[in-house]
Image (cartoon, rainbow, N blue to C red; front, top):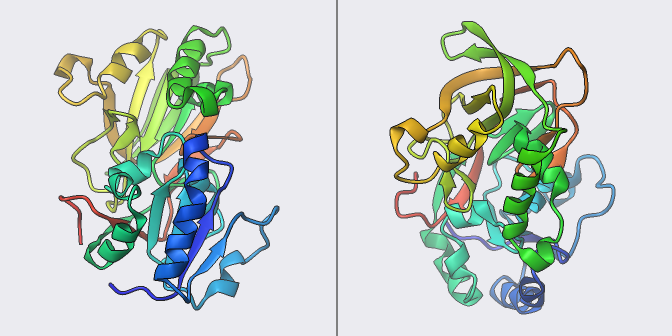
Length: 302
């Protein structure tokens, strides 16, 4: 794959001070490598409808930012014909780490030279209501945790774990019910749910993995559920570590759709998508389109 007219969208406010300082040299390297390239240092607020129509001549979309930045750009419906390269400029950078890109960014000139060797990982995004997501969408525990995250610039990824602990102990941790449509079309109900995690890609956070051997282009959501007592979340979360014993692994299954029902006491179900807090979503499902992500993973598809 040879790219000549890439579009690079940067989020200059994402990540640590070190990552923000690296943005200038990265953009200089990008323009030196791609004289016909185009750089947007931020997205207009609010982004206009049909945002990508004005960039129909571009042959690659490069995003510099964290998983939340990618999530917001995904909501602008980038054309499926446009491959996506995700550069780690945020705090967690789960997606770029999974794609094998993070180690290459310290030498951006080398990264641009290696682009023709990259493979394509085809991913069918999920939908939380109308919000597309590439990594995962969570309801309950981690939805509440994302709302409580603070101090990312100072604490980095530690801020996620502290928010998760605070949410586990919070009296506001809700319970709710689900109606699941399984792969065979049958419907089942789960009650007293504390945490629902729908994954499209194996990584969740740091070393934690959900469904590590599954392919992200298959037509189902990978669902992790914790019902009953809140302390089951601790065991389930630890069960996402590589090599965790079978008894620690959370209840999981593959589904076509998830429909949420609040508890009889009412109250909003907290949601997150790709690590961003979002409004409560009535359902989780799969998008109709498929995106192509540039990947340097040894076991990549394509």
